[in-house]
View 1 (spheres, rainbow, N blue to C red):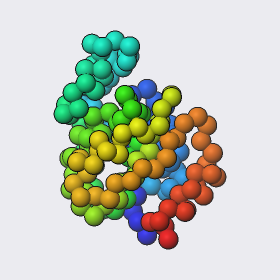
View 2 (cartoon, rainbow, N blue to C red; view 1 turned 90 degrees about the vertical axis):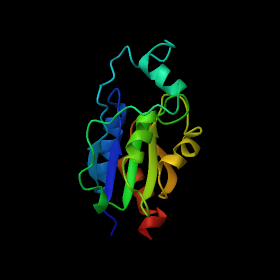
View 3 (cartoon, rainbow, N blue to C red; view 1 turned 120 degrees about the vertical axis):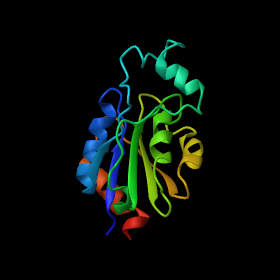
View 4 (cartoon, rainbow, N blue to C red; view 1 turned 180 degrees about the vertical axis):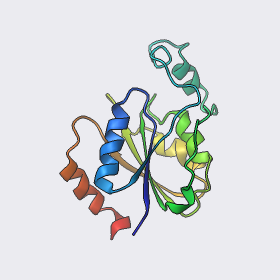
Length: 161
């Protein structure tokens, strides 16, 4: 049996809720990816080109520091990484998180929330951050999440066969 971790970054609470449901359904441990400096509402104003999130996403090499690390990452062979889609990709704090660990041989499956877009170029933009892990696109977790449907979807993953 795979030991699974759901790691999530949530700026507004939407992704936290989705990640909590995913962890419950998957029987996984839950870890919050927290920035050292939490995002304020003004930081998240995507309409303002000078807001923190806008500035960070214009420079995809920027790596916001993460406040805490998963203390026992070596125990997990499956990571579900959840995040909101920002500018059609994952926020760069997800790169910071992934680059903080030796992910060799681990499976990293992406889950995202978004008000209007799909994964966009997320997979492509995270490949270099995954240090020889098996990186795969999972599911968009938008709206009301049907636990039974999500459970059935998880059962059909190749890792569970």
